[in-house]
Image 1 (cartoon, rainbow, N blue to C red):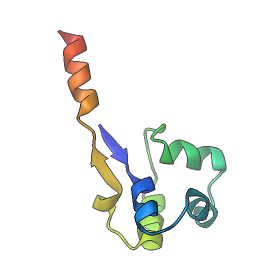
Image 2: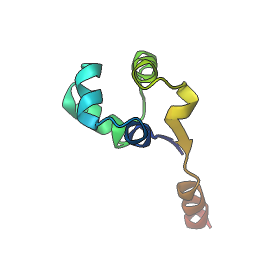
Image 3: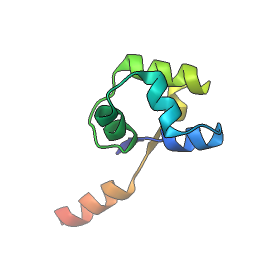
Length: 77
């Protein structure tokens, strides 16, 4: 499963979730769902803005979590 790893980038840049939230101009509810990987989509504009703010590439924002894939495989057997 693809996951947003923005909290790690924020920590590495010495920034807080609140700092990013204020700059993105999103509702707090949508922002919180996004950073906690509780949403199934993120707008390209948001990805672009996060990259500008954190001076990173889109590839830096995401990681692949294979632990859920393994768990799904075990449950399917």
